[in-house]
Image (cartoon, rainbow, N blue to C red):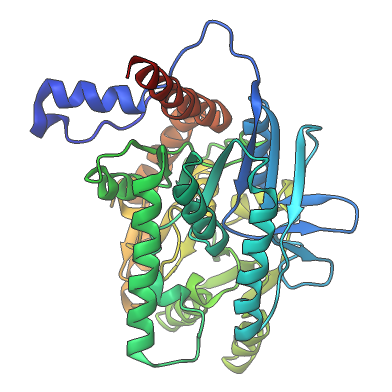
Length: 443
């Protein structure tokens, strides 16, 4: 499977070959399940209905694929229960593999509850620590950070997955949302930056959601690769169309958790702005979350109930796909705090031109003016201008649609994330252990 090889032009053939050895997909004569226990600590909670555990569609499929290569996989994480705000959002994928078991960490509310949650999570990880042969840790996330420290203290091997740059997203992910204390925010940013850098330095291999993070951590001298996107590829149906915005009404679509950092309030303002400019624009919002009531009230207060349809959470499937196909432009005004949002892949796969923000790793994967249009985060006028540009320019829409579909077709051809993780384990964990044993015997 092809992966980016960075820095070859500058450093010459020897450096290029060295990097290639670090990130290539190893081929095996007889690929069987590894007789060992891998523990996965995801960056976000699972969902639990009292009988079964669930996860996001892409995340669940990714873990299932990993489990095909290991004798036992233990998922250690928090879990939303029925009635929790994000239960339905996190219960898209039901786990089926018999070799996956679950260890649930307690989930608490409030600032002091979260502090106590850290203590209880540490105790849970320690309780099962000796039974695990290798960890696969997803960050940003405090449980993964704790586990990485324990692994470095004991010498237990771990692999790392960076879903976003914790350091860059520190202000958005600051736990005291209402606090304006710049000193506390600065301390938090330095703390999570330290957690992240130390985790990368100690990992046998780090996988990143996007090329930007891959480039950032190459200087650490550790193997760093760009991960295959965590998508449910068998359920991914590519849809070809030549153009959009050909009807009297232009439909803008937002899909995502209704969190402050996702920028849905800017989506609402953009719909209002464009209607004020004389365009017949309507907006559709799919998702639920902490900001849902606030956003619904905003729609009502702004007199936009007739042009913005907030449909709440819709489980991944044909209904969501149809919403993509009914839309003319996909708009994601995210403020940051993520690597490369899954919904952008979904929009590309449905031949939907994209307007989003130039944050995190998004502009490194979506080439500006080739795969999407960009605006600075929080800049309503720039976002509205880019949407207007797409509405007016048919040839630009067609270029983005065609390029996006080709991008997804190529990506789908290298879509086995479980195989990638197993290959990297063989090369950087099991292979390193074997080398260490050989060196000890030689000594």
